[in-house]
Each structure stands twice: as structure tokens, then as C-alpha cells.
Length: 361
Image (cartoon, rainbow, N blue to C red; front, side):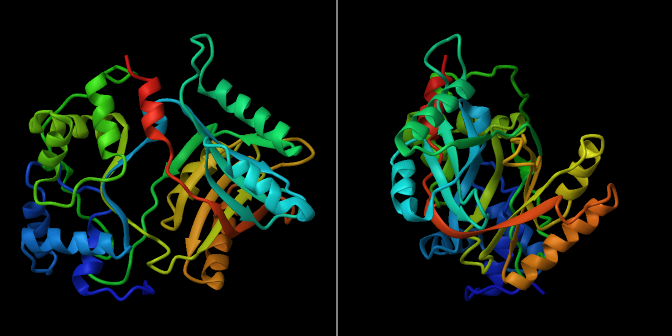
């Protein structure tokens, strides 16, 4: 049973389960979405569905509704960074780090040395001979100079899975409604850059779609574009990977998923490519990456993020990751760790507008 803290109706639970992806990219998407819920025994009209999604968004059960933009495919670069903040200077160091606009998320995590973990997000480098990764290194040098603390850059070397889905007890328990086939047939382009019109579209939808019965038409009106172009471009972005999925984005804290465990592993190189996809397939693993080691400080090269509603549930899920790992190599007690977050130090959106602008041609 998937229990949640939020007081949710059967319709609420159906919405959360069914539409964390695969929401229709059509002129009037709520009608076919409502019909799909009807096929699962949840009777609702398109208008009622739209109103309920809006209410879930207004009350904070949803973080937003719309297209989840893949910032990495839009432009610029981002990296996970770890550092040590001494206890006697902790607040000062964190405040200095957080003052950098390039720092998006920042968490305090349980680790004997590396207790501050943040994400740096930058636009492409203004120097045509350099790239976003060079700009990340420049920002880290500035942070080190400002704090007097060394940073440890942990860029993503390989992505095995990004797909945080938080299902709840109720209708459509497997979250298997996929109405993406209702979108127009479009072919992916081979361009890595954005046109000015595409940039404007990305900036408009990055924070979510309007929760109306005609969300794509409303976006089109906001950027003075044709609605069919908006629909076709969002669908093309989805196929190209610039948009990861279209649907509701739950606030996992509101759903009771308050335990956030970052499990880290020293996986032998010869089994890494086998282990990655298998761990990524575990339903409770929301992010799964290969990242670099830092000799003498950080010996782990594999990250798998888990979420749970209680500490006990999180521990069971971490144990399941370990059992899965053990099918491929002899996992010792020193070969892994779990870094639970103890405090959110900063949480702002990735600055997609600047990254899109830097990648516009």
C-alpha cells in the first residue's frame, strides 16, 4: 500500500498516478485525459479534471503542471558539487555559497567530512573556445576563493535514469496511462541550438503550462505564436529529449516522501555498465548516475537517489539496492554509503532562460 500524508480523494490519486507523464499534447488535452481515467473506473469530465488539477497545484500537492524541460539539452551545463563547511563557520560558508546565483539546489547531508552538496548551473561560456563545463570550473574557483574551502566537482559522466515518479495508493496504481500518441506526428531535428522562437517557448513553459482547458493555445498567445507550432514543437522537444515528459509534477514532500537518501557506491569499472541499468529499473530509484571519484576524499563513482516516507522504508529500499548490487560484485561494508539530507539550504529553479539564451542561434 502506498500511503500519503496529504488528504487526497480517489480522483486526486488517479490524477497523480496516471499523469506524471504521457499527458496529451493536443489543443484540448483534458477531454482525452478524462476519457482515459474513465477507462480506469474514474468518471470525470474534462472541465472537472482541469479544475481539480488547478486546485492540486494551488494547494501545493503538485509542484507544477506541464512540460518538464531537460535543462542539459537546452544549453549550458550543470554539475553536482560537494564541499566541507566547518562547524564553527557552517552558516557563514553556506550563506556565501548560496549568494552565487549559479548555485541552484543546496543540501546539508550526513557525511563525516563532505556535509554541503549543491548544484551549479551555468549558461554556455561566452568565450567560443570554451564551454559550459569550463564556466562551472570558473564558478567553483570563485566559490573556493570566497569561502576558503575546497570544492569537489562531481559532473555526470553517464546517466542511467532520471524519472522521479511518486505513486500513491489508489486508482491507476501502476501509473501506466500514456496519451503521448495523441500528439501530432513530428520528426526530431538534428540541431543542437535553439531558434529565437524556440528559446521564447522554452522560457515560457519552463515553470509549467497554464492550467486551463487550452494550455497550449494560452502559451501560443503569450509568445505570439501559432498554436499548432507550439503543439508540434513541444512534441518534437519531447522526442528530442529537450522535454523529459509532459504531465503533473507532484510535490513529493506533500505526498509524504520526506526521506531523501543519496546512496553512493564504489562500483568496479568492469561491471558498472551492467549494474547501472538494473539499479535504474528499481521503481523507487529516481536518479541514477556515474560520477567521478576524488582520490583520498571521495571514492564512490555511482549514485542512486531513493525516496521514502519513513526512515525505515528508506533503509529497506537502500538494502534492496545493495542486494541488487551484490548480484554483480562482492559489495563490502566500505564500498557504499547513504547520505541522507538533513536540511534544505537553498532550492531555486535551474536558470533555464539564461542557458537557452546562450544556446540560441
